[in-house]
Length: 172
Image (tube, rainbow, N blue to C red; front, top):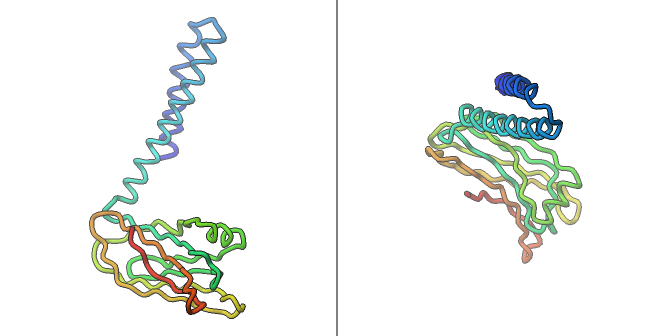
């Protein structure tokens, strides 16, 4: 697809070069060049969207996200999502990412292709609690993929009364 967009860009530049020779004013040339650049960028964007639609149609599109509510009783170090029909998704967190999650960020983890039907998901979120002890939060759930995109968020939230944290799966 990238070759196609580059070829289209060169063709537009060739057409512009032919029309530029007929116009003597530098201001008109600069305006034409800016317009061609915009056209090439728009064409490239359209080609990228078309490529995404062809490679990942809505019937197989699924996405995983991660969020942390407060994070006083749990600090994530890594997450691993496994399931039937796709390769495991793994991510290791940096201090900066954890700080952003504590401020309310929602992190996109992965976009995958997942066939319609029921799928068993298992997410293991490894981290440390407020005492510095290693801890694993596990979410196991069966989800059903329909012909619409499936958007799933793994949410880790504090349980203040128990001074602990829990993980759950949220459907968008």
